[in-house]
Amino acid sequence: MRLTAGDETVALQMLAPHTSIMLDKVMQNFFTTIKRDDDKETVALACEAISATIPLVGAFCMQKNMAELMKLLAMLFDEKTECQEGQVEEEDEDEDDHDQVLIDAVAELLGEVSKAFKESFAPHFEPIFALLQKYLKPTRQSSD
Image (tube, rainbow, N blue to C red; front, side, top):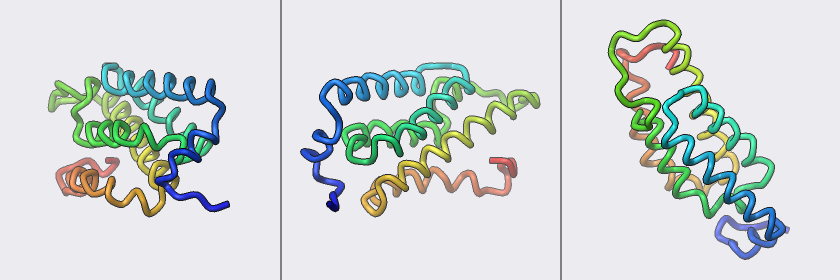
C-alpha cells in the first residue's frame, strides 16, 4: 500500500490512539526543550531524540508536528533559540564544542525530516535554505 503525505486519516490509523497521544506529548516536550532550554547539549539531545523518533513513527505520524518542527529548525539555524541567544564574540574552546554538537544535531534532524517527507519536504525547505547560506560564508568556522 502506497501512502501519500496528505493522507492524515491513514496516519492517525497507523498508531493506536494512546500511542498517538503519547507521541504528541513527547514531541511537545522536545519542542519546549528546544525553545526554552539554555543548555546547548540538552537542546542537541532533544534534536537527536526527534531524529531517532522520525524513522520509527514515519512522516505520516509526524505530519501534524511539521509546522512547529520547521519553525524550530529555522530558529536553530538562525541561532535564535534560548541556548543560542546572547553569545559573545569571544568564545572559549569548550563553547565551540557545544556549538558544534548542537549544529550537528540540528543538521541531522533536518536530514531525517527530509528523508521522511521526501518530495513533499521541498516547500518546507525553501525558508531553511536561505538560513543555511550564512553557514557557507568564508567568515564562518569550517566546522560549521
